[in-house]
Length: 143
Image 1 (cartoon, one colour):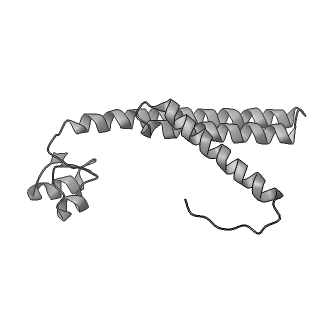
Image 2: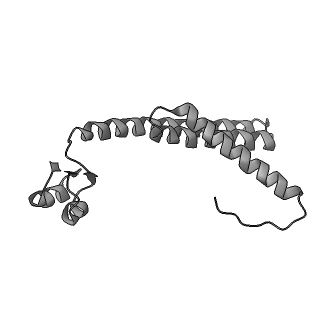
Image 3: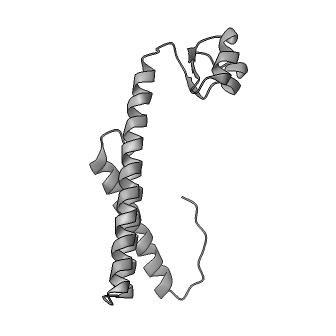
């Protein structure tokens, strides 16, 4: 159900998905599941496209997680168990799942997102190594 005014609040509240377009009135904010600021109802098509991408990414992430878990369980059951390798594979799969989820919000600019994430990881790793080998007590900084 899509509505744009006070009279639509009851219908928005009982609909499976209530979309209020153009109104920031408190009644619509409380009743609707989604509020689209502005007057362009075509934004609903963008929401549907994002929802479909999100569903596909979630399904892919679940498959990856299950496959890695089954693979690691198989390695344990067959005796090919290396704790370091198992931890590395698990953490890399978790990183892949998180990064894949972040790609939804990156609006097609995956390379810049990847550079930003890897840069942040390297900076944090560098800071951790410096802290580990320094004799000073750690100080708290806020970015």
